[in-house]
Amino acid sequence: MEFKDAVLWIRDRAEKAMELLKHERVRAMAIACTCALVVVVFGLVLKGDVLWHTDLPERVEEPMEEIVLNSPEEDDFVREPKLSDDDEKVQPKQPLVIDLSDVRIDLETEMVQINEPTPYGRELLYSAGNSSSIEGPVLTKLFLYNLDTMEQTQVAETKVKFGEIYEGRFNENWIVWLDTNQSGTNYIYALNRKTGEISQVKRCDLNKPQLVLYGDNLVWVEQKDEENDRMYLYNFKSGEPVILESFNNPTYGTCPPALYDDILVWVCPSPEDAGKSIIKKLDLKEALTIGAATAQDSVIQPSGDGPVAQPDDISANDTLQQGETAIEVEIVDVEGEGELRQGENQDDEIYEQVEAEVVEPQIIDPQGFAIYPQTNGQVIAWLDSLNPSDARLLMTRDDGKTIQVVAQGVGRLFGVGDKFIVYTQNDSIMLYFWEIDCYARLTKPDEKGMLSKACVAGNVVVWYDITDASQRKDKVRISIIEQPDI
Image 1 (tube, rainbow, N blue to C red):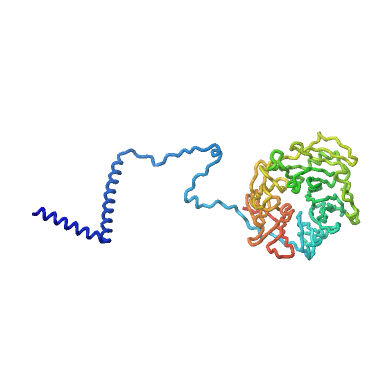
Image 2 (tube, helix red, strand yellow):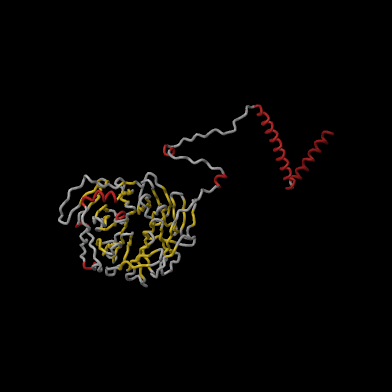
């Protein structure tokens, strides 16, 4: 009976337990107790396994190096080490930018429209006008401005009907400019600052030529017909009209050269790859010394003390006894290499090629496309794209052996000073000092600036303040730059 009573008691307890499990809270407690029991058992097993391994030899803690097989292309690249979390938080070092926005003086003039202010020494040259309308000629007068006395002196006035003055360039000996009606009538004039004589250098039809001047050498690019352009050199002392280059590509034919310290640089398409460029560098002192044996009398005829003859009296084909009417010394490409030769005289007599006296420009490889070169005679800078948003400003100090990227997203106008490059980036006027690897800005954070076309000479930079787009009067700033001590 006792056994039977025990069985009945267990069954009774089991039925009561099942009744309890039907309640949700009790069921949850039972599940929790079961899980706790499983965890305790698993921990005891793991501890025993660890104790069992204490008798094994000590293991190497460093993981084995993973060997990765790279493709041939991948092997040529240097792989960057993986950064830790702390390293990834460190931002790359930003270039030092010095604030030089207080280094400026204003151009004080009553003229409203001021065109292409160009510095040299302590003077500026610019064409200007006060017209209230842009429908007619505006820039009809040429002025010199003294930075020390702040005095403005009129140098010349347009002689062309409906004409304006552009491309003013000057030094201590000469002032040159372009008198144009912007409809195909263009005259290059020169003023001898020592004698006061004004001379017509040349008439150029079609597009406006772009002038650069240094010492006694004047260089310009001139359109000859719809497909061809030429680059001329004119030396005021020898009077030799020299064709330096012929272009049949408008990208290069409309690109002005750069001239400083008698070093002339210009760009041409690469003979090996039409998508790339070459930079040509020519020492004009050497070139003109070699060509001195064939020097002619000056073809610039001074007009004396009287006014310059009206250009309207000159026929469209008259080149003022210059250009094709005089003996020319031309550098002609022969499979990509320049070669000096003489051209035709006014009697169409063919002169023999001068092979004994060859002047070949130095060829610099910009490692790609190059446009708008600038130089100070030693440093050469250029852009690598016609698109300002993509254009990188590049420079070389050793004729292309090393090329440095100065900035990206650079505007069309820039220049090379004695110790710096000045350029426009995001409407700010920026400087880069290559000797100290330092940047600076001339505009204030809330200002917008635009460089003049010939914006720098030595350490003088000229630029426009264009912050207020509604202003009627042009606001010109002059910054005299000294390299910072850092």
